Amino acid sequence: MNIDRTKKVVGVDLGGTTFTVGVMDFEGNVLSRLDTDTPVEDGPNAVMNKIVEYIDMAIVKAGLTGKDILGVGLGAPGILDVDKGINIFSPNLKWHNVDMVSPIKNRFNVPVFIENDVRVAALGERRFGAGKGKKYMIFIALGTGIGSGIIINGELFRGSIGGGGEIGHMVIDSNGPKCNCGNYGCFEALAAGPSMVARAEKAIKSGLETKIFELADRDISKITPALIYKAAKMGDKVALDVFRETSYYLGLGLVTLTTVFNPECIIVGGGIAKSWDILMPPAIQMVKTRSFPGSRDVVEIIPAELGDSAGMIGACVLVMEKLEKGISAS
Image (cartoon, rainbow, N blue to C red):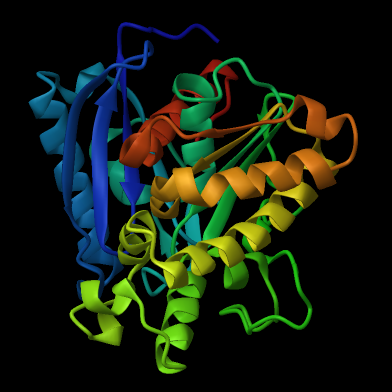
């Protein structure tokens, strides 16, 4: 398909608290970016209307008009029907069967594509970030949960019904804590941010002295992974123990992914990855010693490069790649 590469694309990274809209060219230059609150409590129509408004504003900020835009991509949390452009269910947004495409298409009359937010972040890292040139890669977002985008032979892996890549719900320890999904011992129940906080809280309630409690103003509800990291950097034993246990379970998950998918690289991003210097070395060492021979020798485990722009950039990449393949939008 012949594409006018002098034109631009728009990407939207939609979250339950905030969303980001950006305009990019095909070389990966971000021409404008806007961030704002997501009015979740006002309902889906209010959210979609605000997205349309901010797309308009981002286009103007880039010095462009609607005629300069080739398409719009949206990365959103939840279970999506990407062919019909519907967000089937998103707990973060409190959405059920929301049409995400029509309001944007009706306003701008361009192709509109949607995809899961972590998957589009993987597309962004693969084209313009840490995964450039990689045909087999996994992007992992470590935060409140653990999500992934998996690239196999250059293509985004979605699974038979679009549920592929839900690595946060691999069972790592069948006797582990209950996960939000209802199962026990899931990867994210053992290695995501809330599990770190739960370990710190348990230590404090057992009477152990720790700088974590001091940094939280002796208010257990204020404990965050960032505070635990700060305490660990100060040499606090409880904080270091929290990281040691979290790294262990993170390593187990990475071992499984390395052995099953044999990727060239695993790119790790998200808020928890900011503690890379303490969290990741033990996990990487586990991959190098416990993954299947061969796979462990080729895999690189590296930090993400695009930061909080990954979702927006990835949503732009979603448009680029769909148009390059001649795929029509919803």
